[in-house]
Image (cartoon, rainbow over the protein chains, first blue to last red):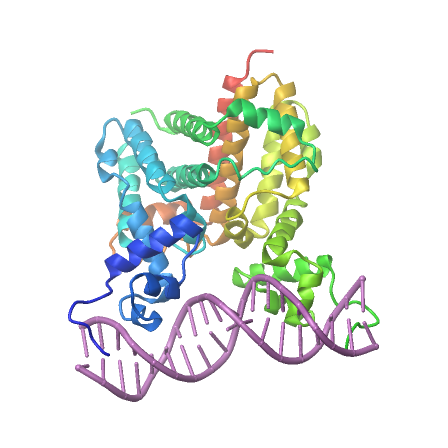
Length: 202
Length: 202
DNA sequence: ACCTGAACACCGTTCAAGT
DNA sequence: ACCTGAACACCGTTCAAGT
């Protein structure tokens, strides 16, 4: 065989296929990607730095949906809130990537750039340097936790008859479909109030 | 061969070994567990409901370190704060289980019981039923996100020279070792203030 | 440069067979 | 009841070989 006239594989197509697999099955494998693209398993390794490299490509792809313009909004608190909403929307679109991405450290340059800009925003707003990362980390925790929560609202809580949890069942029913979204808004509002109180008067 | 005079395997030992493997390598496999316990891979399946069953046993084991007594503290906000701290400590002791546990829904009865009690606490404190689950979910997101963040404080942010992120590097340095812990306390304080403001005057 | 095809050490799971 | 040993379909990764 050897080399085809038109390439079967590239990083773009590999990433798209991996994302489709994760959206459908919650996971991906290199052979599965190769099969869908009509290539051999080994061929994938010519374009990508192994399985971990594909995970990093997924992180970039998902994070690319975060609107960087949100961080230019004024005042600073509106910017942070808009960023959080855009961040949530990006991951909520592909929530099953989250457990995958959480297992490995952030190396993707574009993701690091977003954090660089968020740090700049808060420093320029007058926050003490010591307070900046805890705030951003708390925001990140809130966003990722909420996105994951949004993933499987019906199945995340298996309230079986074998274990009687009537109050939990009631509270879940009362909260309804919007529970995970509500939890995000509650956490965001709480964090923003805290941030505003923390900021030195400027 | 056949059956030994004294059993090689039981759920207790399987869980302990799986937890050790996850603590060490971030993951486990059924053959690895069998090998450490001196048994054959297939034998594990006589005690446990497959790999997913072991994951559920891990959830129970880790969550068993949460002190249920915290939910009896008065007043209600001190109880919720104590619970959150105990919850964080339990998962921070085995942070690498978190990505594993997040991929599957909560079925463990003991974990569901904890939530049942937390719901009861907030209902008795006078919260509207609609507000209870969003609050608890926000708290859970905060705890799990923070525990994960505590897992690999040095490696979670790979600030390479190839991608210049000087402000991020400064902010990380300023926050220091306690960054993830600070992020948790920031988020918790914010959420508790919000909860107190939300509660109908009683 | 890009892909094949085969190899290797590893998975999760099942099941007849032994004591 | 508890374990072995073998089987099956699947992984991730490497690499000589082809065009």
